Amino acid sequence: MPPRTLGALAGALAWLAAGCGGAGETTVAVYAAASLSEAFEDLAARYEAANPDVEVRLNFAGSARLAAQIGAGARADVFASANGATMGRVAAEGRTAAPPALFARNRLALVVPAGNPGAVTGLRDLSDDSLVLAVCAPEVPCGALARAVLADAGVDADADTAETSVRAVLTKVMLGEADAGLVYATDVAAGGDKVAAVPLGPQTRFNDYPVAAVSDRAVAAHFMDFVLGPDGRRILSDHGFGTP
Amino acid sequence: MSRRPPVGVLAMAGVAIGVLGLPLVGLLQRTPWSSLGATLGEAATLEALRVSAVVSLAAAAVSVMLGLPLAWVLARLPFRGRALVRAVVLLPMVLPPVVGGIALFFALGRRGLIGRALQNGFGVDTLIGTTAGAVIAAAFVAMPFFVITAEAGLRQLDPRLESAAATLGAGRWTVLRRITLPLLAPSLAAGATLSWARALGEFGATITFAGNHPGRTRTLPLAIAQANEAGQPEAAIAMSVLLIAVSLVVLVGLRHRWLAPRRRWPEPSQEIPSP
Image (cartoon, rainbow over all chains, first blue to last red; front, side):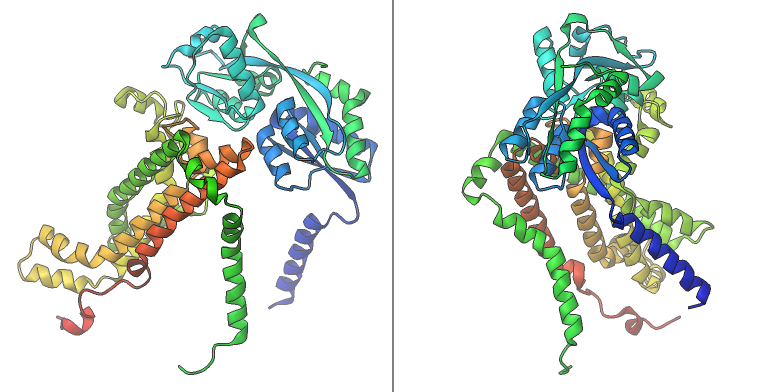
């Protein structure tokens, strides 16, 4: 092999190895509900700025998937779930190192593509079978919330698809493939100008987000405190989350 | 062949068997055998099994019907850009299925390339939550497996056999029916089985493009993922065992056709003198 090829190969290997190593730096693995994506990216950036020796590794998915991953032994340090039931599953498996604490509040929102092609004016319209409706699967917190809100309103809606995370619902609405979706109020902002919210008024329901350390590492408790502290509260409020 | 096989080769082969087989053993030792029947008998499981059967068989049928002409074109018709066409056709084999699902949206979705035409021409408003959508997603990832196998079969087939039949007065249809297809049968069976197996296991493109709707698009893989995330690992394991059992039965049943296609004719080159 010519020396230049060898050199390039060695360089490539060094680059690959650097990605895996993390040379002595402390990392904290944070598993957070999909609806927290933007807020926790900001939180992580602020935390890393305040703690330069710590690297935050974020894993976003539907809370149910994260709970299953943690239950299967994933090396997570912090878990932030979109409801208490999912956190309860992780706690019941003995994975929480400290009692969970509530840190944010959200509410269910009805979202439609920009221009509202399905002419959706409220929950009642969702019983129309010709409308393409996307919701979360029942085991995902946003799915449990959506079913509760629909039941409250006495609306019998047959969703065309039950997605595994609220952001998958949002994507289908953003693409215009679904006429309506039930997501969180904060997701409407994440959808930008591709989506619009149909006000639900008093028909909506709230959900509270618990966070818990799921490892005994000091950095896990430290990050959890950061989420619950003033910086965390301010960043979450900037992203539209309320306080529980 | 009395020489002992090299120890290194045996060791590596053993590691390979471990890598491929250990997860299966792990799953089986965690299987709740006593409650397996009850779990599998649940209505939701049977529904997912039915959807899986319908979707995978339909996707395999589509793969054969459309894939055979395509394989013939790729094997027999020299044209510029054939390598490029073949690469595009085989791309779904290496593409993450979720990419396929997203791409299908941009092609067949409401705002996709031919979405409007589907709506006006066929009255197809959406493919989300429809079995047709699930079949399209499964066929997208499964068809390349049929095409590549059928094309290889066509290339191995001695064209002089077909020429000989033609010179003896057989029409194109007769040649196809009496010579080409019978010779090709093992490859077609292997390709159809492979594409069916791929369709049966399909997850990413299906959930992305066709969504998750019980009785219409929720196949066994989707139901397994959902049960796993719903904190019902027993149900997930039971359905996994079912999927594995079905796949194994079919793969073992077709092992002769697949690995060592039986020749129905003697080696053609020795039987037919060159013109």
